[in-house]
Image 1 (cartoon, rainbow, N blue to C red):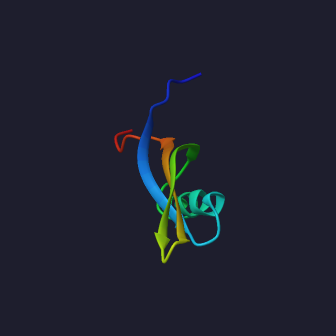
Image 2: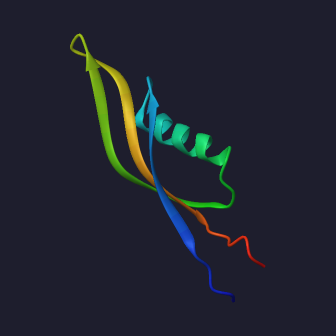
Length: 72
């Protein structure tokens, strides 16, 4: 098997409904411009509050994808 290299980027997804949807939003957006997504690691979960109520769920994630050199 050939050796592979992966790049990791940190993203923050948001949702007004849940942390799961916030993490999924980060992955969905990344999939629009990155190829060969591999693993998502949830690093931190938090919320924003307005008027004493949860306003936004936020999920900070590390997302890895296969790194390909432009040289062949």
